[in-house]
Image (cartoon, rainbow, N blue to C red):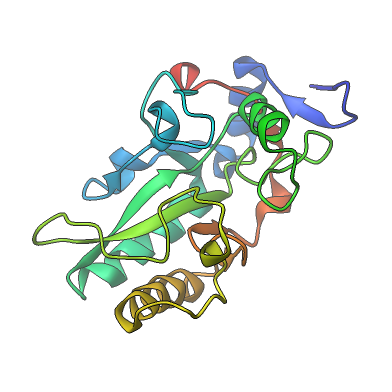
Length: 207
C-alpha cells in the first residue's frame, strides 16, 4: 500500500487485499450474484451504455464489502414481499476507473476526483433501480442510469406520480437498511460505514 501521485492511499495488490481480508473478514468484496441470486445485474460499465460510451469493465460483475452486501440482501428481501426486486447498475468500482470518469466529466458533482476517490472504490456504494419480479421489467424511475440531468436529483419533483412513487419505494427500502442516497443521483446509495474501508484498485478478474 502506497500513497499515489494524487496524495491518496490505494490498495492495488490482490495479495495485500487478501491479507487484510484474512485479518478482518468484513473487508471481503462479496460477489452479489452469489449472495443474492435473484438480483438483476445490468452492469453498464461492462457495456457501451455509460457516460464514457465504451466498456470499462472486462466482466459484468458486482461486488460489495461484506457488511454492505448483507445490508443489500436485506433490502432485496423486503422488496420481494412487494413483488419487486433490485437492479444493480454498479457496485465496487476500481479506483483507476474513477480516475477515467473524472478526466471525462471534470465535475465533482457527478464524478469523484482522484485526490479523494469514490466510495464505490471502497466497495461501499451501490447504484440501483427497481424491477418487477413477475416480469423482470424495469420500473419507471426519473432518468436512465448515469443520465446527468436535473431530473436525476432525488428532490426533483416535475415527474409523473407513478415515477415519484417508485423513487420513494426505492429510497425507503434502502434507507431502512442504513443506506444514504446521494441527492444528485437518485440511483446512488452509500453505506454509512464507508470510512472503515480502504480505497481499492483491483480488477474484477482478480477477485
